Image (tube, rainbow, N blue to C red; front, side, top):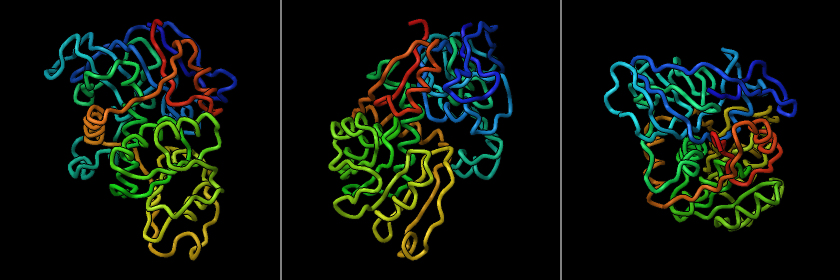
Length: 334
C-alpha cells in the first residue's frame, strides 16, 4: 500500500513525510481493516510530524480523521461487515477496565492508544482499527465532508461542552482552525452569539459567513464580556488575553493537545471572580456519537480543501501557515 511515512520528526517545511510502498497491514482479533478514502489533516498531525508530541514509535503513519470502508475483519468482529462505511478517530483503544473507562471518562485512560500516534493512521491506503472504536457515519455526508467531523468536529464539540456555554450565551473562539469552523455551527444552532479572534483574513471572512457577530484580533476589545471562551490555537500567550475578555464566573477551555508556554497570570486581573480554566483531553466515543448525530440534525457543512496523499507535507505546511480555510483533507488515489 502507499503511505506517507514519518521516519524522523522535523520541521514541516523540510518535508519530513515521504511516500512509501509498505506491506498491507492485517486485522487482528477484534479489529477491522479499512480501505481509506479520505483522511483529514489536523494540527495534532502537525505536532506529531514536528516532534512536539512524544513519539513512542517510529517509523509512523500519521492521520486520525479517516473515512473508508471495511475490507477485512479479524476474529471476533460482529458489529461490522465487509463493505460497511466507517470513521476512525483519534481514540484508537482504551483498557476498558480502569476507573476512568468505567466512569465514562475513557479519554483519560492511562493505557489509551491514539490513531496516528501509537497506531499507524490514515495517511495511507489501508488502516487497522478496533471495531468497537469505528463510527458509523451519517448518510448525508460524503466521505470528504465526513472526515473533519472525526476530530475537528468531535474535539470542537467536547470543547464547547467543557466551556460551559449555555444556549443563548456569548462565546469567544480564539483561532479559527478546522475545529472552530465546526464548533461555530454547533454554537449558532444552540442560539449562541459567537465572537471570533483570529489573525487570518481568510479565517475572518469564513467566520463571518458562518454567523460570527464580531471578528477581531486577540488584543482587540470585543463588544462585551464573554460567558465562555475556547482557545483552539496552540499559543499560550492567548490565555491571558482570553481571560481578560471573560466575564465573572466564565470558563475558558483550552482545546489543543499542545500549547506553547503560558505567560505568568495575575490572580486579581486574570483569575479572580470565579473564572475557570480547563484543558480538553482527547474525547470519548460518546462525544463522537453525539457530535455525529448533531451534525446530521443541524446539518453541519464542513468546508474542505482536498489534497492528494502525496501532498501531505504541503497540506501541513499550509495548515501551519494558517492558509487553509476550513479543513484540509487527503484524498487517496485522487
